[in-house]
Amino acid sequence: MMLDLPWILWLLAIILSFWALEYFAFRYPSRENTLSHAVSSMGAKFPLSIAIFGMVIGILLAHWFWPWGANPLGLGAG
Image (cartoon, rainbow, N blue to C red; front, side):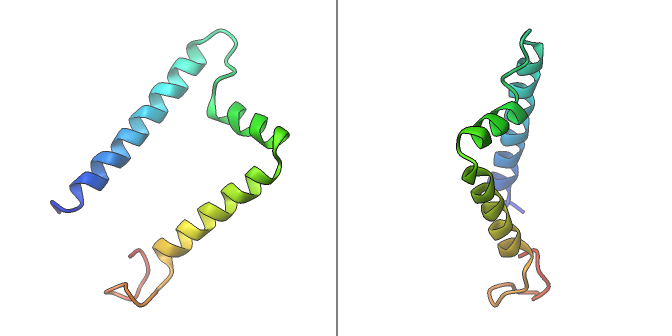
């Protein structure tokens, strides 16, 4: 468990920072600084970015949940 603690704290920091950024974006009158607006703006200027982002997410999901040789249980999530 102690070896997992830095990862858990890092993920909590990501969640809290995401919450803070979205909170302040919605408090701002124009409400244009949200993650959704940033993704749609980037997709409009560089459409391939959305496909690349999807491939990165797919690779990470396959890495985490595919039963592979280094997984001690052989069941995924490893």
